[in-house]
Image (cartoon, rainbow, N blue to C red; front, side, top):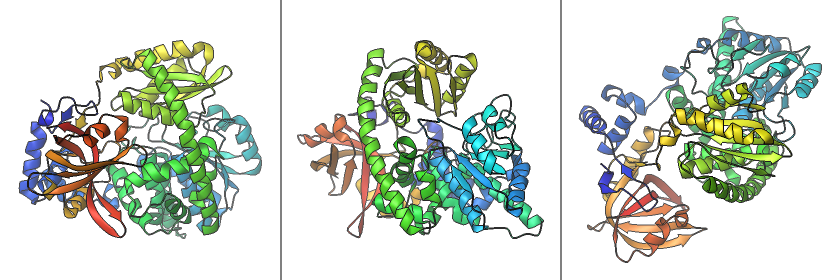
Length: 580
Protein backbone atom coordinates (compact mmCIF):
# COMPACT_ATOMS: atom_id res chain seq x y z
CA UNK A 1 0.00 0.00 0.00
CA UNK A 2 1.31 3.45 -0.89
CA UNK A 3 2.20 5.95 1.81
CA UNK A 4 -0.53 8.60 2.35
CA UNK A 5 -2.25 6.91 -0.62
CA UNK A 6 0.13 8.58 -3.07
CA UNK A 7 0.33 6.23 -6.05
CA UNK A 8 1.53 8.82 -8.56
CA UNK A 9 3.06 12.06 -7.29
CA UNK A 10 3.79 15.24 -9.20
CA UNK A 11 7.14 13.74 -10.20
CA UNK A 12 5.52 10.45 -11.23
CA UNK A 13 6.54 8.40 -8.21
CA UNK A 14 4.78 6.17 -5.74
CA UNK A 15 5.41 6.99 -2.08
CA UNK A 16 6.49 4.07 0.09
CA UNK A 17 6.67 4.09 3.88
CA UNK A 18 8.34 1.83 6.40
CA UNK A 19 7.51 -1.85 6.63
CA UNK A 20 5.68 -3.26 9.66
CA UNK A 21 8.98 -4.76 10.86
CA UNK A 22 10.74 -1.40 10.70
CA UNK A 23 7.87 0.31 12.52
CA UNK A 24 8.07 -2.25 15.33
CA UNK A 25 11.85 -1.90 15.53
CA UNK A 26 11.45 1.90 15.71
CA UNK A 27 8.99 1.59 18.60
CA UNK A 28 11.46 -0.61 20.49
CA UNK A 29 14.29 1.89 19.95
CA UNK A 30 12.08 4.73 21.16
CA UNK A 31 11.10 2.82 24.31
CA UNK A 32 14.72 1.85 25.00
CA UNK A 33 16.46 5.17 24.30
CA UNK A 34 13.86 7.96 24.54
CA UNK A 35 15.22 9.35 21.26
CA UNK A 36 12.76 11.35 19.10
CA UNK A 37 10.40 9.11 17.13
CA UNK A 38 11.61 10.36 13.70
CA UNK A 39 15.19 9.50 14.63
CA UNK A 40 14.11 6.04 15.80
CA UNK A 41 12.41 5.39 12.47
CA UNK A 42 15.59 6.30 10.59
CA UNK A 43 17.74 4.09 12.80
CA UNK A 44 15.32 1.18 12.41
CA UNK A 45 15.29 1.58 8.64
CA UNK A 46 19.09 1.43 8.69
CA UNK A 47 18.98 -1.85 10.60
CA UNK A 48 20.31 -0.48 13.90
CA UNK A 49 19.24 -2.58 16.89
CA UNK A 50 17.84 -0.88 20.00
CA UNK A 51 20.88 -1.71 22.13
CA UNK A 52 23.21 -0.29 19.44
CA UNK A 53 21.34 2.95 18.82
CA UNK A 54 23.20 5.26 21.20
CA UNK A 55 26.60 4.02 20.06
CA UNK A 56 25.59 4.28 16.42
CA UNK A 57 24.94 7.99 16.82
CA UNK A 58 28.50 8.50 18.11
CA UNK A 59 30.68 6.22 15.96
CA UNK A 60 34.32 5.92 17.00
CA UNK A 61 36.91 5.26 14.32
CA UNK A 62 38.97 3.12 16.69
CA UNK A 63 36.01 0.76 17.05
CA UNK A 64 35.15 0.53 13.36
CA UNK A 65 38.53 0.72 11.60
CA UNK A 66 39.45 -2.76 10.35
CA UNK A 67 42.85 -4.33 10.91
CA UNK A 68 44.86 -3.48 7.76
CA UNK A 69 46.48 -6.93 7.93
CA UNK A 70 43.11 -8.44 7.09
CA UNK A 71 43.85 -7.50 3.47
CA UNK A 72 46.19 -9.69 1.47
CA UNK A 73 49.63 -8.24 0.60
CA UNK A 74 49.16 -5.38 3.08
CA UNK A 75 52.21 -6.19 5.20
CA UNK A 76 54.38 -6.60 2.08
CA UNK A 77 53.16 -3.30 0.62
CA UNK A 78 53.83 -1.38 3.84
CA UNK A 79 57.25 -2.94 4.32
CA UNK A 80 58.33 -2.11 0.75
CA UNK A 81 57.00 1.44 1.10
CA UNK A 82 58.91 1.92 4.38
CA UNK A 83 62.09 0.58 2.78
CA UNK A 84 61.79 3.16 0.00
CA UNK A 85 61.37 5.95 2.56
CA UNK A 86 64.25 4.80 4.77
CA UNK A 87 66.62 4.34 1.82
CA UNK A 88 65.46 7.62 0.26
CA UNK A 89 64.57 5.85 -2.97
CA UNK A 90 62.97 7.69 -5.87
CA UNK A 91 59.20 7.17 -5.55
CA UNK A 92 56.49 7.83 -8.15
CA UNK A 93 52.74 7.83 -7.52
CA UNK A 94 50.63 6.81 -10.54
CA UNK A 95 47.02 7.86 -9.91
CA UNK A 96 43.66 7.71 -11.63
CA UNK A 97 42.29 11.06 -12.79
CA UNK A 98 39.13 11.15 -10.62
CA UNK A 99 38.56 12.36 -7.04
CA UNK A 100 39.40 8.97 -5.53
CA UNK A 101 42.64 8.78 -7.47
CA UNK A 102 43.56 12.38 -6.69
CA UNK A 103 42.79 12.00 -2.99
CA UNK A 104 44.71 8.71 -2.83
CA UNK A 105 47.73 10.32 -4.46
CA UNK A 106 47.50 13.34 -2.16
CA UNK A 107 47.46 11.06 0.91
CA UNK A 108 50.81 9.56 -0.14
CA UNK A 109 52.35 12.81 -1.36
CA UNK A 110 51.47 14.68 1.85
CA UNK A 111 52.65 11.82 4.09
CA UNK A 112 55.92 11.48 2.18
CA UNK A 113 56.53 15.24 2.16
CA UNK A 114 56.20 15.35 5.94
CA UNK A 115 58.75 12.53 6.08
CA UNK A 116 61.15 14.59 3.97
CA UNK A 117 60.58 12.68 0.72
CA UNK A 118 59.43 14.39 -2.49
CA UNK A 119 57.62 11.96 -4.76
CA UNK A 120 56.71 12.29 -8.43
CA UNK A 121 53.03 12.51 -9.34
CA UNK A 122 51.82 11.01 -12.62
CA UNK A 123 48.20 11.15 -13.73
CA UNK A 124 47.39 9.85 -17.23
CA UNK A 125 45.44 11.98 -19.68
CA UNK A 126 41.90 10.67 -20.03
CA UNK A 127 41.78 11.15 -23.82
CA UNK A 128 45.35 10.39 -24.89
CA UNK A 129 46.16 7.59 -22.43
CA UNK A 130 42.88 6.41 -20.97
CA UNK A 131 42.32 4.80 -17.58
CA UNK A 132 45.14 3.20 -15.63
CA UNK A 133 48.81 2.45 -16.27
CA UNK A 134 50.05 2.16 -19.85
CA UNK A 135 53.30 0.67 -21.17
CA UNK A 136 54.92 3.91 -22.27
CA UNK A 137 54.24 5.82 -19.05
CA UNK A 138 55.35 2.96 -16.82
CA UNK A 139 58.59 2.46 -18.80
CA UNK A 140 59.37 6.16 -18.50
CA UNK A 141 58.68 6.24 -14.76
CA UNK A 142 60.74 3.08 -14.22
CA UNK A 143 63.78 4.70 -15.82
CA UNK A 144 63.86 7.42 -13.17
CA UNK A 145 62.30 5.77 -10.10
CA UNK A 146 62.88 2.79 -7.83
CA UNK A 147 59.28 2.36 -6.65
CA UNK A 148 55.99 3.12 -8.41
CA UNK A 149 52.81 3.12 -6.33
CA UNK A 150 49.63 2.78 -8.42
CA UNK A 151 46.56 4.13 -6.63
CA UNK A 152 42.93 3.60 -7.70
CA UNK A 153 44.19 1.60 -10.68
CA UNK A 154 46.58 -1.19 -11.64
CA UNK A 155 44.79 -4.40 -10.60
CA UNK A 156 44.25 -5.44 -14.23
CA UNK A 157 47.38 -3.77 -15.64
CA UNK A 158 49.51 -6.87 -16.25
CA UNK A 159 51.35 -5.58 -19.33
CA UNK A 160 52.12 -2.04 -18.14
CA UNK A 161 53.39 -3.24 -14.76
CA UNK A 162 55.60 -5.81 -16.49
CA UNK A 163 56.88 -2.96 -18.69
CA UNK A 164 58.18 -1.08 -15.61
CA UNK A 165 61.56 -2.80 -15.81
CA UNK A 166 64.06 -1.65 -13.22
CA UNK A 167 61.43 -0.44 -10.75
CA UNK A 168 59.15 -2.26 -8.34
CA UNK A 169 55.40 -1.62 -8.22
CA UNK A 170 52.83 -1.55 -5.44
CA UNK A 171 49.12 -1.51 -6.34
CA UNK A 172 46.58 0.04 -3.92
CA UNK A 173 43.20 -0.30 -5.59
CA UNK A 174 39.55 -1.27 -5.13
CA UNK A 175 38.38 -2.13 -8.65
CA UNK A 176 37.25 -5.64 -9.47
CA UNK A 177 40.20 -7.98 -9.94
CA UNK A 178 40.71 -10.75 -12.48
CA UNK A 179 41.74 -14.37 -12.05
CA UNK A 180 45.44 -13.46 -12.13
CA UNK A 181 47.34 -10.64 -10.45
CA UNK A 182 49.83 -8.37 -12.23
CA UNK A 183 53.58 -8.81 -11.52
CA UNK A 184 53.74 -6.32 -8.64
CA UNK A 185 55.47 -6.55 -5.26
CA UNK A 186 52.04 -6.25 -3.66
CA UNK A 187 48.44 -5.84 -4.83
CA UNK A 188 46.28 -4.58 -1.98
CA UNK A 189 42.67 -4.61 -3.08
CA UNK A 190 39.59 -5.70 -1.08
CA UNK A 191 38.00 -6.72 -4.40
CA UNK A 192 40.69 -9.18 -5.43
CA UNK A 193 39.21 -12.51 -6.47
CA UNK A 194 40.84 -14.20 -3.46
CA UNK A 195 39.49 -11.71 -0.89
CA UNK A 196 36.28 -12.41 1.04
CA UNK A 197 34.77 -9.05 0.04
CA UNK A 198 34.13 -7.95 3.63
CA UNK A 199 35.90 -4.64 2.93
CA UNK A 200 34.79 -4.42 -0.67
CA UNK A 201 32.97 -1.18 0.09
CA UNK A 202 36.22 0.76 0.60
CA UNK A 203 37.31 3.25 -2.04
CA UNK A 204 40.98 3.44 -3.05
CA UNK A 205 41.68 6.26 -0.59
CA UNK A 206 40.37 4.03 2.20
CA UNK A 207 42.81 1.32 1.10
CA UNK A 208 45.69 3.83 1.00
CA UNK A 209 44.76 5.07 4.47
CA UNK A 210 44.80 1.52 5.82
CA UNK A 211 48.26 1.03 4.32
CA UNK A 212 49.47 4.15 6.11
CA UNK A 213 48.01 2.73 9.34
CA UNK A 214 50.02 -0.45 8.73
CA UNK A 215 53.11 1.63 7.89
CA UNK A 216 52.74 3.43 11.20
CA UNK A 217 52.44 0.10 13.03
CA UNK A 218 55.57 -1.32 11.39
CA UNK A 219 57.55 1.85 12.05
CA UNK A 220 56.53 1.78 15.70
CA UNK A 221 57.46 -1.91 16.03
CA UNK A 222 60.87 -1.12 14.50
CA UNK A 223 61.44 1.71 16.98
CA UNK A 224 61.40 4.37 14.25
CA UNK A 225 59.51 7.70 14.15
CA UNK A 226 55.94 6.90 13.13
CA UNK A 227 55.36 9.82 10.80
CA UNK A 228 52.62 12.45 10.57
CA UNK A 229 49.25 12.39 12.31
CA UNK A 230 47.02 10.13 10.23
CA UNK A 231 43.80 11.55 11.66
CA UNK A 232 44.66 14.87 10.02
CA UNK A 233 44.52 13.14 6.62
CA UNK A 234 40.93 11.96 6.99
CA UNK A 235 39.51 14.97 5.13
CA UNK A 236 41.02 13.49 1.97
CA UNK A 237 39.60 10.04 2.71
CA UNK A 238 36.15 11.51 3.35
CA UNK A 239 36.17 13.47 0.09
CA UNK A 240 37.16 10.40 -1.92
CA UNK A 241 34.66 8.10 -0.20
CA UNK A 242 31.69 10.37 -0.85
CA UNK A 243 32.72 11.49 -4.35
CA UNK A 244 33.35 7.89 -5.46
CA UNK A 245 29.84 6.98 -4.22
CA UNK A 246 31.23 4.34 -1.89
CA UNK A 247 28.65 2.93 0.54
CA UNK A 248 28.56 4.92 3.78
CA UNK A 249 28.54 1.82 5.97
CA UNK A 250 30.97 0.25 8.42
CA UNK A 251 34.37 1.90 8.50
CA UNK A 252 33.40 4.28 5.68
CA UNK A 253 30.80 5.92 7.89
CA UNK A 254 33.33 6.61 10.64
CA UNK A 255 36.00 7.74 8.14
CA UNK A 256 33.65 10.26 6.55
CA UNK A 257 32.23 11.42 9.86
CA UNK A 258 35.71 12.14 11.29
CA UNK A 259 36.91 13.49 7.95
CA UNK A 260 34.19 16.13 7.96
CA UNK A 261 35.35 17.25 11.41
CA UNK A 262 38.92 17.55 10.11
CA UNK A 263 37.77 19.45 7.03
CA UNK A 264 35.83 21.94 9.14
CA UNK A 265 39.16 23.04 10.69
CA UNK A 266 40.17 24.46 7.28
CA UNK A 267 43.78 23.36 7.63
CA UNK A 268 44.33 21.96 4.10
CA UNK A 269 45.04 24.81 1.66
CA UNK A 270 43.56 23.01 -1.34
CA UNK A 271 40.24 22.23 0.30
CA UNK A 272 40.03 25.71 1.82
CA UNK A 273 40.52 27.32 -1.59
CA UNK A 274 38.06 24.95 -3.24
CA UNK A 275 35.43 25.57 -0.55
CA UNK A 276 35.84 29.29 -1.05
CA UNK A 277 35.41 29.23 -4.84
CA UNK A 278 32.39 26.97 -4.35
CA UNK A 279 31.00 29.60 -1.94
CA UNK A 280 30.49 27.17 0.92
CA UNK A 281 29.32 29.22 3.89
CA UNK A 282 28.65 26.47 6.43
CA UNK A 283 30.29 23.43 7.99
CA UNK A 284 31.01 20.76 5.36
CA UNK A 285 28.63 17.85 4.95
CA UNK A 286 28.53 14.78 2.72
CA UNK A 287 26.34 16.82 0.36
CA UNK A 288 29.07 19.45 -0.07
CA UNK A 289 31.68 16.76 -0.75
CA UNK A 290 29.54 15.02 -3.35
CA UNK A 291 28.00 17.98 -5.15
CA UNK A 292 30.24 21.02 -4.63
CA UNK A 293 33.83 19.90 -4.03
CA UNK A 294 33.94 16.53 -5.82
CA UNK A 295 32.80 17.79 -9.26
CA UNK A 296 35.37 20.59 -9.16
CA UNK A 297 38.23 18.24 -8.28
CA UNK A 298 37.03 15.95 -11.08
CA UNK A 299 36.88 18.73 -13.64
CA UNK A 300 40.62 18.66 -14.36
CA UNK A 301 40.56 14.96 -15.20
CA UNK A 302 37.40 15.32 -17.26
CA UNK A 303 38.14 18.20 -19.60
CA UNK A 304 41.36 19.86 -18.42
CA UNK A 305 44.80 18.93 -17.18
CA UNK A 306 44.56 15.51 -15.55
CA UNK A 307 46.74 16.18 -12.50
CA UNK A 308 45.12 19.45 -11.38
CA UNK A 309 42.89 17.81 -8.74
CA UNK A 310 45.68 15.79 -7.11
CA UNK A 311 48.00 18.80 -7.12
CA UNK A 312 45.34 20.93 -5.45
CA UNK A 313 44.70 18.38 -2.72
CA UNK A 314 48.41 17.81 -2.07
CA UNK A 315 49.74 21.37 -2.09
CA UNK A 316 50.86 23.09 1.10
CA UNK A 317 50.89 26.53 -0.58
CA UNK A 318 47.76 28.71 -0.15
CA UNK A 319 48.83 30.78 -3.18
CA UNK A 320 49.11 27.71 -5.44
CA UNK A 321 45.88 26.31 -3.98
CA UNK A 322 43.96 29.49 -4.83
CA UNK A 323 45.19 29.46 -8.43
CA UNK A 324 44.41 25.75 -8.90
CA UNK A 325 40.96 26.11 -7.33
CA UNK A 326 40.07 29.00 -9.65
CA UNK A 327 41.18 26.95 -12.65
CA UNK A 328 39.16 23.91 -11.57
CA UNK A 329 36.09 26.04 -10.90
CA UNK A 330 36.28 27.47 -14.43
CA UNK A 331 36.74 23.99 -15.90
CA UNK A 332 33.73 22.77 -13.94
CA UNK A 333 31.56 25.49 -15.46
CA UNK A 334 32.79 24.48 -18.91
CA UNK A 335 32.14 20.82 -18.07
CA UNK A 336 28.52 21.58 -17.17
CA UNK A 337 27.94 23.21 -20.56
CA UNK A 338 29.42 20.27 -22.44
CA UNK A 339 27.47 17.84 -20.29
CA UNK A 340 24.15 19.58 -20.96
CA UNK A 341 24.56 19.26 -24.72
CA UNK A 342 25.58 15.57 -24.56
CA UNK A 343 22.83 14.79 -22.08
CA UNK A 344 20.07 16.19 -24.28
CA UNK A 345 21.20 14.22 -27.32
CA UNK A 346 21.84 11.01 -25.30
CA UNK A 347 18.37 11.15 -23.78
CA UNK A 348 16.84 11.50 -27.24
CA UNK A 349 18.65 8.34 -28.33
CA UNK A 350 17.70 6.45 -25.20
CA UNK A 351 14.03 7.36 -25.55
CA UNK A 352 14.07 6.31 -29.21
CA UNK A 353 15.40 2.87 -28.22
CA UNK A 354 12.92 2.61 -25.35
CA UNK A 355 13.40 3.14 -21.65
CA UNK A 356 11.93 -0.17 -20.47
CA UNK A 357 14.87 -2.36 -21.50
CA UNK A 358 17.29 -3.79 -18.89
CA UNK A 359 19.98 -1.42 -20.25
CA UNK A 360 19.57 2.16 -21.44
CA UNK A 361 22.41 3.31 -23.68
CA UNK A 362 23.48 5.97 -26.14
CA UNK A 363 26.54 6.47 -28.37
CA UNK A 364 27.65 9.13 -30.83
CA UNK A 365 30.71 10.60 -32.51
CA UNK A 366 32.50 13.43 -30.74
CA UNK A 367 30.99 13.11 -27.29
CA UNK A 368 33.61 14.21 -24.80
CA UNK A 369 34.86 11.18 -22.82
CA UNK A 370 35.11 13.36 -19.73
CA UNK A 371 31.34 13.80 -19.40
CA UNK A 372 29.91 10.45 -20.55
CA UNK A 373 30.00 9.11 -16.97
CA UNK A 374 28.02 12.04 -15.61
CA UNK A 375 25.49 11.77 -18.42
CA UNK A 376 25.14 8.03 -17.76
CA UNK A 377 24.43 8.85 -14.11
CA UNK A 378 21.72 11.34 -15.09
CA UNK A 379 20.05 8.85 -17.44
CA UNK A 380 20.22 6.15 -14.79
CA UNK A 381 18.51 8.49 -12.31
CA UNK A 382 15.80 9.40 -14.82
CA UNK A 383 15.03 5.83 -15.90
CA UNK A 384 15.94 3.68 -12.87
CA UNK A 385 17.90 1.47 -15.27
CA UNK A 386 21.63 0.81 -15.67
CA UNK A 387 22.89 3.27 -18.28
CA UNK A 388 25.92 3.38 -20.59
CA UNK A 389 26.99 6.40 -22.64
CA UNK A 390 29.77 6.14 -25.25
CA UNK A 391 31.65 8.77 -27.24
CA UNK A 392 33.35 7.67 -30.48
CA UNK A 393 36.57 9.01 -31.97
CA UNK A 394 36.95 7.26 -35.29
CA UNK A 395 36.26 3.56 -34.92
CA UNK A 396 36.95 3.44 -31.18
CA UNK A 397 34.41 4.39 -28.54
CA UNK A 398 35.12 5.12 -24.90
CA UNK A 399 32.21 4.97 -22.53
CA UNK A 400 31.11 4.90 -18.95
CA UNK A 401 28.23 3.23 -17.17
CA UNK A 402 26.29 3.67 -13.95
CA UNK A 403 24.11 1.07 -12.26
CA UNK A 404 21.22 0.74 -9.86
CA UNK A 405 21.29 -1.05 -6.48
CA UNK A 406 21.36 -4.82 -6.81
CA UNK A 407 22.82 -4.87 -10.33
CA UNK A 408 26.60 -5.42 -10.64
CA UNK A 409 27.54 -3.50 -13.77
CA UNK A 410 31.29 -3.82 -13.27
CA UNK A 411 31.20 -7.62 -13.25
CA UNK A 412 29.03 -7.69 -16.39
CA UNK A 413 31.34 -5.33 -18.30
CA UNK A 414 34.39 -7.28 -17.14
CA UNK A 415 32.77 -10.43 -18.57
CA UNK A 416 32.15 -8.69 -21.90
CA UNK A 417 35.84 -7.80 -22.08
CA UNK A 418 36.76 -11.44 -21.36
CA UNK A 419 34.38 -12.56 -24.12
CA UNK A 420 36.09 -10.24 -26.61
CA UNK A 421 33.11 -7.97 -27.24
CA UNK A 422 34.98 -5.04 -25.67
CA UNK A 423 38.55 -3.90 -26.23
CA UNK A 424 38.74 -3.21 -22.49
CA UNK A 425 36.38 -2.82 -19.58
CA UNK A 426 36.01 -3.04 -15.83
CA UNK A 427 35.01 -1.19 -12.71
CA UNK A 428 32.87 -1.94 -9.68
CA UNK A 429 29.23 -2.67 -8.94
CA UNK A 430 27.82 0.82 -9.42
CA UNK A 431 30.18 2.28 -12.03
CA UNK A 432 32.33 0.97 -14.87
CA UNK A 433 34.26 2.08 -17.94
CA UNK A 434 34.66 0.46 -21.33
CA UNK A 435 36.35 0.74 -24.72
CA UNK A 436 34.55 -0.72 -27.73
CA UNK A 437 35.11 -0.99 -31.48
CA UNK A 438 32.38 0.57 -33.62
CA UNK A 439 31.63 -2.71 -35.42
CA UNK A 440 31.08 -4.51 -32.09
CA UNK A 441 28.90 -1.83 -30.48
CA UNK A 442 25.44 -3.29 -31.12
CA UNK A 443 26.52 -6.82 -30.24
CA UNK A 444 28.23 -5.63 -27.05
CA UNK A 445 25.22 -3.63 -25.87
CA UNK A 446 22.84 -6.50 -26.67
CA UNK A 447 25.00 -8.91 -24.67
CA UNK A 448 25.34 -6.46 -21.79
CA UNK A 449 21.56 -6.00 -21.71
CA UNK A 450 21.18 -9.78 -21.60
CA UNK A 451 23.61 -10.12 -18.67
CA UNK A 452 21.95 -7.29 -16.74
CA UNK A 453 18.49 -8.75 -17.36
CA UNK A 454 19.61 -11.92 -15.58
CA UNK A 455 20.37 -9.73 -12.55
CA UNK A 456 16.85 -8.27 -12.63
CA UNK A 457 17.61 -4.91 -14.22
CA UNK A 458 14.58 -5.08 -16.49
CA UNK A 459 12.18 -5.63 -13.59
CA UNK A 460 12.68 -2.21 -12.01
CA UNK A 461 9.78 0.20 -12.32
CA UNK A 462 9.89 3.95 -11.78
CA UNK A 463 11.87 4.67 -8.65
CA UNK A 464 9.69 4.81 -5.56
CA UNK A 465 10.18 7.64 -3.08
CA UNK A 466 10.89 5.96 0.25
CA UNK A 467 9.85 7.94 3.31
CA UNK A 468 10.63 7.58 7.00
CA UNK A 469 7.23 8.75 8.24
CA UNK A 470 5.27 11.96 8.70
CA UNK A 471 6.08 15.21 10.44
CA UNK A 472 4.16 18.40 11.08
CA UNK A 473 5.90 21.77 10.56
CA UNK A 474 5.99 22.49 14.31
CA UNK A 475 8.04 19.31 14.90
CA UNK A 476 10.67 20.29 12.35
CA UNK A 477 13.13 21.95 14.71
CA UNK A 478 16.85 22.61 14.56
CA UNK A 479 17.27 20.23 17.51
CA UNK A 480 15.57 17.39 15.61
CA UNK A 481 17.74 18.03 12.55
CA UNK A 482 20.90 17.95 14.67
CA UNK A 483 19.94 14.55 16.10
CA UNK A 484 19.01 13.20 12.67
CA UNK A 485 22.41 14.27 11.32
CA UNK A 486 24.06 12.17 14.04
CA UNK A 487 22.68 9.10 12.26
CA UNK A 488 24.71 10.15 9.19
CA UNK A 489 26.62 10.92 7.16
CA UNK A 490 24.17 9.99 4.42
CA UNK A 491 24.88 8.92 0.88
CA UNK A 492 25.30 5.68 -1.06
CA UNK A 493 23.68 2.72 0.77
CA UNK A 494 22.62 5.12 3.55
CA UNK A 495 19.86 7.32 2.10
CA UNK A 496 19.17 10.59 3.89
CA UNK A 497 16.05 10.77 6.08
CA UNK A 498 13.01 11.89 4.16
CA UNK A 499 9.66 12.73 5.66
CA UNK A 500 6.22 13.58 4.41
CA UNK A 501 4.50 16.70 5.73
CA UNK A 502 0.80 16.06 5.08
CA UNK A 503 -2.09 18.31 4.13
CA UNK A 504 -0.32 21.67 3.77
CA UNK A 505 -1.38 24.83 1.98
CA UNK A 506 0.87 26.94 -0.25
CA UNK A 507 1.18 30.40 1.30
CA UNK A 508 3.32 31.69 -1.55
CA UNK A 509 5.57 30.26 -4.24
CA UNK A 510 8.01 31.74 -6.74
CA UNK A 511 10.63 30.62 -9.22
CA UNK A 512 14.21 31.41 -8.23
CA UNK A 513 17.39 31.02 -10.21
CA UNK A 514 17.00 28.85 -13.28
CA UNK A 515 14.02 26.56 -12.79
CA UNK A 516 14.12 26.27 -8.99
CA UNK A 517 11.14 26.76 -6.67
CA UNK A 518 10.97 28.62 -3.37
CA UNK A 519 7.76 28.02 -1.44
CA UNK A 520 6.21 28.75 1.98
CA UNK A 521 3.90 26.04 3.30
CA UNK A 522 1.40 26.22 6.19
CA UNK A 523 -0.67 23.75 8.14
CA UNK A 524 -4.13 24.50 9.57
CA UNK A 525 -2.78 25.59 12.96
CA UNK A 526 -0.73 28.59 11.98
CA UNK A 527 2.61 26.76 11.69
CA UNK A 528 4.70 27.05 8.58
CA UNK A 529 7.91 25.88 6.92
CA UNK A 530 10.00 27.20 4.05
CA UNK A 531 10.95 24.81 1.27
CA UNK A 532 13.14 24.85 -1.80
CA UNK A 533 13.08 22.46 -4.75
CA UNK A 534 15.94 22.48 -7.25
CA UNK A 535 14.96 21.80 -10.85
CA UNK A 536 11.28 21.86 -9.87
CA UNK A 537 10.21 23.26 -13.24
CA UNK A 538 11.70 20.26 -15.06
CA UNK A 539 8.69 18.29 -13.76
CA UNK A 540 5.07 19.10 -12.85
CA UNK A 541 6.21 20.00 -9.33
CA UNK A 542 7.11 23.63 -9.98
CA UNK A 543 4.16 24.62 -12.21
CA UNK A 544 1.57 22.86 -10.01
CA UNK A 545 2.73 24.36 -6.72
CA UNK A 546 3.11 27.80 -8.32
CA UNK A 547 -0.42 27.67 -9.71
CA UNK A 548 -1.96 25.86 -6.77
CA UNK A 549 -5.37 27.50 -6.83
CA UNK A 550 -5.78 27.06 -3.08
CA UNK A 551 -5.34 23.28 -3.21
CA UNK A 552 -3.72 21.41 -0.33
CA UNK A 553 -0.73 19.12 -0.78
CA UNK A 554 1.23 16.37 0.86
CA UNK A 555 4.90 17.30 0.46
CA UNK A 556 8.02 15.20 0.97
CA UNK A 557 11.70 15.92 1.37
CA UNK A 558 14.69 16.27 3.63
CA UNK A 559 14.97 18.67 6.54
CA UNK A 560 18.03 20.92 6.59
CA UNK A 561 19.38 24.06 8.21
CA UNK A 562 19.42 27.07 5.92
CA UNK A 563 22.04 29.64 6.85
CA UNK A 564 21.64 33.08 5.31
CA UNK A 565 23.00 36.42 6.47
CA UNK A 566 24.29 34.91 9.70
CA UNK A 567 20.89 33.50 10.65
CA UNK A 568 19.85 29.83 10.66
CA UNK A 569 16.38 28.43 10.07
CA UNK A 570 14.72 25.12 9.24
CA UNK A 571 14.13 24.44 5.57
CA UNK A 572 12.65 21.52 3.65
CA UNK A 573 14.63 20.34 0.64
CA UNK A 574 11.49 19.52 -1.33
CA UNK A 575 11.69 16.33 -3.41
CA UNK A 576 8.08 15.72 -4.29
CA UNK A 577 4.44 16.60 -3.68
CA UNK A 578 0.97 15.23 -4.31
CA UNK A 579 -2.49 16.71 -4.00
CA UNK A 580 -3.99 15.91 -0.61
